[in-house]
Image (cartoon, rainbow, N blue to C red; front, side, top):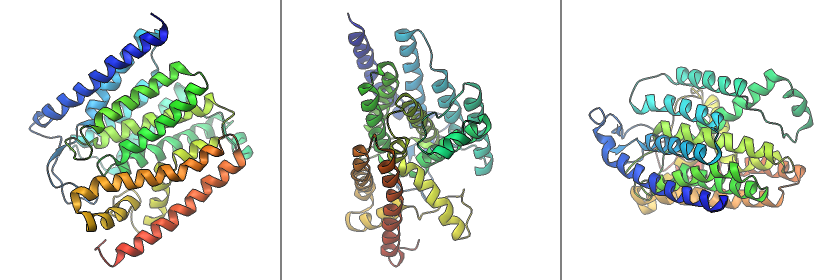
Length: 357
């Protein structure tokens, strides 16, 4: 049996294991510590459900990812320690919140920074393909390189957690990103690394079966942090493995996760609010208010996820044309920022007089 057949067989078995893992987790997690994982807070700014749903998707995703690392070791006789460390550490921080252990946002951010700096410095994790000459010179310095990579992780991880408020919104977005990365790596014959990416798509698709259109399970903070950290590492490694591709193209496919955090940070500062505390004025929430007015809350929940991800896919598609052109990739990335702001301001005006937000 050839190597490709063995890999396909392992992936088929792994897909079945992930499905049954999420099935078991969705059925049994409500019994953990008297239902501590159940999301019963229907009044928080980012709550759009009306029934108790377990926040155990992250636990299922972590179990599945650990299973894959075992399969990876059987196939290649090595362990990707960068994935092992970043996945477990980010999952751990988020799982504390899922268990309703009250940690202030600043302390949670500080824990994240400590874990990530440890990963970046000691493993190490570097970004070697940058299309901005002066930035390439700056990150040649080890200290500034660590800070730059840290910021990349923080933006994407927190972006993942930020948009994880509707059924399928984050999950579909991560599936799209990972499919693009798989295509790029298989085209470049990075088959072994592609296996790691495919495993994550399998996890996300299996979870989606229990989260969309009607949620039986949520990712929770642990799942958002875990999958957000993994897609960050996926993109950094793909960028390094494909120096012929513009680094701004990778910025483009991560645009929604990145710019949602950046825009919200400055928006809250302008409104004299704490940038680390949640509110209900994010783009995906404004669009939900309009959709739910016409279709109702339940349909509005999953229709909003479809609309936003379809819009995201349409907007990043031109970036595929500029894959190998740093200048045009850069222009399109900044054009996306302008498009986002225009859409946001339009949605804000449409909802301002209709909803008390």
